[in-house]
Length: 102
Image 1: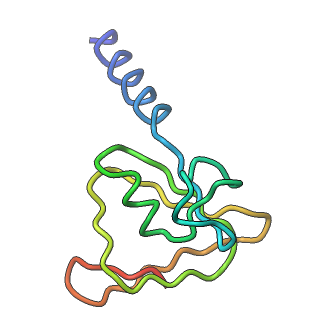
Image 2 (image 1 turned 45 degrees about the vertical axis):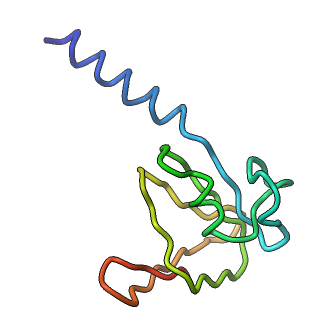
């Protein structure tokens, strides 16, 4: 029983460790690969699209981002702010099951 539990925990940790991290910055470009702050995307929608059906983490640099189109999240996704100052990610629901990042 303990071995099964330990195996399950190791699998869960390995899954999180294998998640791809994408970056979003106001100075980025959606033509970039989004895999570092230097090659960050400029929109959250592009980062979510790049994540696709894989587990991913999106780190958003300080700034103001507006997303007017629906964004479909198809897998576990972590969205966090970066930088020294506290960064808030605000989701505003405009229609049932659709969210806009403002």
